[in-house]
Length: 253
Image: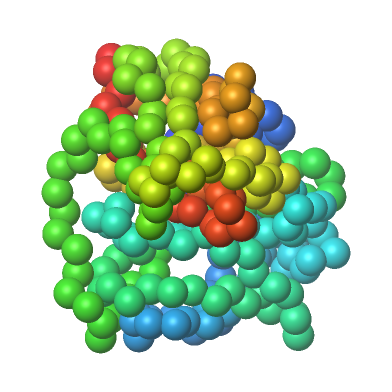
């Protein structure tokens, strides 16, 4: 485990009590891909093992508790913070397998999240290169963009000012372009899942909003550890479809 990874872990523990409330296991668990080198873009079967250096063994599905209805979460995004996958690997024949959709070339960060049987949080990351696909997304600065959509579904995040190291409460509202009433349903045991990362991509916040005063509203409680721009992906079920809406915010000192 690198010094950078340990530093990231300490930041998350110090500044994000609602994100990772339990002791992190990221210093003891490593992602080990079955095959090294770049992967061809498109529909990808990604095989890997999770090695627990404390137990000196590979982690199986029997070594994990369910966390938000799944044994393991895999979150993947590219360096430009445009491409995004949130999938749930399966365990078979002593290896984990994730089915990814990555049509665009580039360098990606893969995060594995779960909960070990002793209650420790599994949190580990590795780089993945994608080639022979669509042209790599350019690295562009993130602006403060708090409204986005997925097909007919729209989400607007409150303009509340966000400061580094301070708990913030961000209200949001879901509407539809076609005028229909939005119908929300739980996704993986929560109202929604919010994945956030700074422009470096080297930190990950994963929070679960509280329900708001109306069925189409919610509130995100989070602490952003440092100033700068952050990409947010907000995922929820609306009218029986999974929606993923990318937004971005600026965090001030």
